[in-house]
Amino acid sequence: MNDYKTLTPAISVAGQLQPDDMKALAEAGFHTVINNRPDGEGEDQPTSDALAGAAAEAGLQYHYLPIIPGEISDEQIQRFGQLLTDNRAPVMAFCRTGNRSSTLWALSQSSRLDPQTVLATTSAAGYDLEKQRPRLEQRWQQGQNADAARRSPANDWDVLIIGGGAGGLAAAASLLKRRPSLNVAVVEPRDTHYYQPAWTLVGAGAFRRRDTARPMTQVMPRGSKWIRARVAGFDPERNQVILDDGDRLGYRALIVAPGLELNLDAVEGLRDSLGHNGVTSNYLFEHAPYTWECVQNLKHGRALFTQPPMPIKCAGAPQKALYLSCHHWEQRGVLKNIDVHFHNAGEALFGVADFVPPLMEYIRRYNATLNFRSTLQAVDAGHRKAWFVDRDQDGNAREREESFDLLHVTPPQKAPAFVADSPLANNAGWVDLDPASLQHPRFTNVFALGDVAGTSNAKTAAAVRKQAPVLAENLLSVLDGRSPGAAYDGYGACPLTVEKGKVILAEFGYQGVLQPTFPLAPTQARSLYWWLKAKAMPRIYFDLMLKGHEWLTGPAK
Image 1 (cartoon, rainbow, N blue to C red):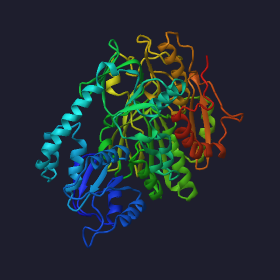
Image 2 (image 1 turned 30 degrees about the horizontal axis):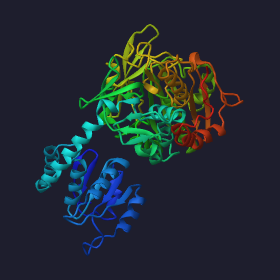
Image 3 (image 1 turned 90 degrees about the horizontal axis):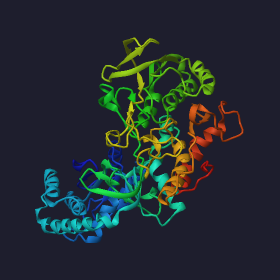
């Protein structure tokens, strides 16, 4: 593959690519290819069809947007910008030399980036686009005028939703199902939406990673407006959200649902170690396939699995990775050669006591060693070393060094800083909420759901499925001048994948009260639940929950 130039982390440009380059692009981390060179410009030029076939074989999205030199239309600029919005980054765009692709990028971004910034970016990549300055300046001014109109106080929102993950989109869909006339906006900086519950299956070779990602434009609920921006803070006294560019958005009601953040820097060396020498994590989209690679390659040695202090999203996921890995090794006849350890910062295998006995049966079956009150502190992938702090029942600490051949890490997790440092946060940094109504105790037009919520339920997508209808009912009551009447009972679900093909479906609410959906013994591993986890739940998520279809989720009163 010829040398390419990176314009931003989201897009690079290159000269003519060949079909053989597509595999290398995929291996380099690209997800989308845009061909800006018309067929037949050069004798040795491959056809777009040949390139499209090679891209599909490599798992890349491919788009053909041919540009004749010197004849870039406004329609083509808009189309290129839309491709960048609708497809997963990073994107590789190419033509004969890369000049047309870099020009398209510059013009497509000129309504939001000033000409000097655009020209400096392309110049740093080796493309002199100074002759495009008049057009860039014109488009920049047009963009500024449009922004001024869009940001006027008259265009404040009925409901402003922070976060385009499971919580934000499910809430938007539930609201608009009940009241389609609402003026709803979702503030989300990412261009891709992820179905995170399947990443554990990706790490076990049982699900395709690309099927967990969809462009944000495809999942945004009908009738809602997507504002692609980052939030810097909240001003609930004025009913405003502050964006990182200093702009403010007004609202009648606010929903806070940005999820949580993986705190990779809380473990020394983790950020640099991930993806190398057996250090992996199913909690990251880019590393879940590496888990499966490591599991397949390990025939003997030591495998460590970690779980940090609570709260974390999907508290069962750390041990799911252990069970599925051990089952693979058991099936291949190599488990007896692998020393398996589970380091859990907590004091119990699972937070709901009813499910501990059946899980312990699998721990014994896989001959895994449990290390409670053991927290990962540092990693050195190069030397395959990990350091833990172990605490006894009296709180006394000692450091322990462990060698490994595979280390699956569940990173520590925290609320986003713009939430934790805001007037909306509780003492732990999460959004302060009434656990039943999901309403803020001081700012009554503010609600929250999902991982950022300061409630004691398990942080799972299943919890969001039950929270969204409750929140929608209560928020509409507030807008109508009534008191909230719907109640969330703390429901959460954790499909514990104890082996490939069997799941213990743990469903429970506040105080660990069991809430099974099916009239079956809830602690028994079943093939039916594997089908539910691997096949049904992704469809329920995308086709029902994110579209406002509330199957088995009617809110209690």
